[in-house]
Length: 242
Image (cartoon, rainbow, N blue to C red):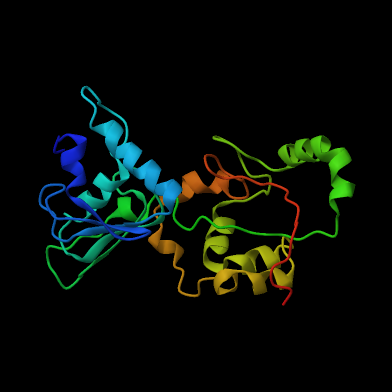
């Protein structure tokens, strides 16, 4: 990593609008393209504080600042356009979280980067509406939270409560939500509210290694760990009634 003082680092970053910044070539070695990132005032402060702290004498370890990671991606072989930091940008493992890049696959030096894809690809968000009101839930919120913990497997090492074998997993991988529908775990209308109706028609479980399947089998049907959560919220205002 190039080590410079903070003021010198800033000469490589140019504000191009109220919420966008250009990262010039030279900010990191061997950049093939420029970088750009988008941030509101709050995220802007976090990004630049991160960079400032990394310039302090004796600072070692930890993640590289997000702007440095954007610039490192700009140095990857075959990248086209720019290395882009989207409005959720923050430091990650190699690639920043929210870092987007495109590569020319007709270029023989170009890359496919598993680190760029990420190990938590395809994390989803589901929103389920109930017929309950806040006044119904408030008095029993502690019991409700405990019941969720009791009935939803969560955390590192947790295991699903649905009995499954290797054949079941193969079918679930191939059929997606249609498998859950067949087994009675979802309603038909749930599919209408899922991307691709809950099933990728070209999915091919044979492309997944046996090792990955062995690791995934006990985890299917769990909430997982890390930045995964289930929560209950109250609708305070409806902006679009249609």
